Length: 284
Image 1 (tube, one colour):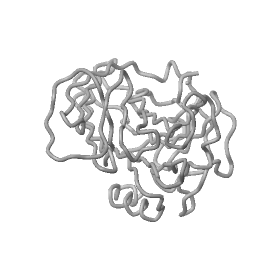
Image 2 (cartoon, one colour):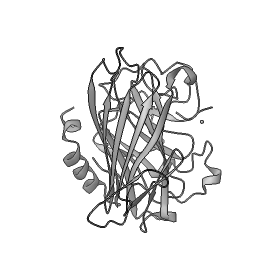
Image 3 (cartoon, one colour):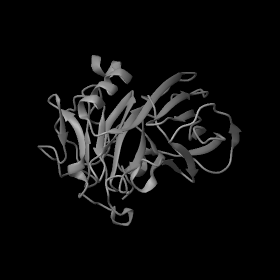
C-alpha cells in the first residue's frame, strides 16, 4: 500500500557501503538512492526503473486496519556494492529486533533476491509480510510526474486467471476498501484478513506472477516471490508481488527469494520461465 501513498532481479544501488567483487559482466546494474533501488539497463525504456525497497514491513490483520498500525518501523543499511554494480547487499533492522539480510544480484535480463530473516530476540516478531514497490511509469511509456492514482497503464498490466494471462482491470474489479484506489489479489493459501487495505478482488490468482508490457509493446516486466503474500496494483503506476514472513519465533530463521524478469513480449515463454524458477508455486 502507498501511504494516504524472489529467483532473480537486476538493481542499481548507489552510495555508501563496502565494495564487493563480481566476475562476469551484465547489462543490468544496481544503485541505491536513499530508500530506492534503481535498476539500470540500456534495454529499459527510459534507461531505468525504481523500487521502493522496502516500502514497508507489515503486521497481520492488515486488510481493514489503519496503515499506521500495520507498518513496523525499520532501518536499512547498505553493506556492500560490487565494483561492477551487479551484486548489492543490504541489512534491514526492524523495530523489535528482527534482522533481514538481502543479497541482490543483477544479470542480463533479471534480478535475483536472496533474503535471510532471523529473530535474535526473546519474543515472537509481528513482522508478517513485506512490500517491494516497483514504479513502472517509464517502462509503460508514461511520465512519472503524472503517476498519482493513474489508471492509464492498467491495460498493459496482467496477472493469471483461469489458466490464461488476464489484463487489468480484471472482471469483478473491486472499488471499496479502507483506502482507494488500487487492487489486491489474495492467493488461496493466505488469510484474506492479512493483505493490503486496498480494494480486494474476489478473484484468486492462478499463481504468484504479476507483470506488464512496455510502452512500445516489445518487452515484458514481471516479478514473483516465494513465499508470497499477495499481488497488488497500486496507486503510483506500481505493481507488487509482496512476500511473506509469517512472523518469526525467538531464534527462528527464514529464507525468502524473489525475481524480476525483463524479457521479450512472449507470454508462454514467460510462464515456462516462471514455472522453472518457482516450481513450488506450481504445486499449489
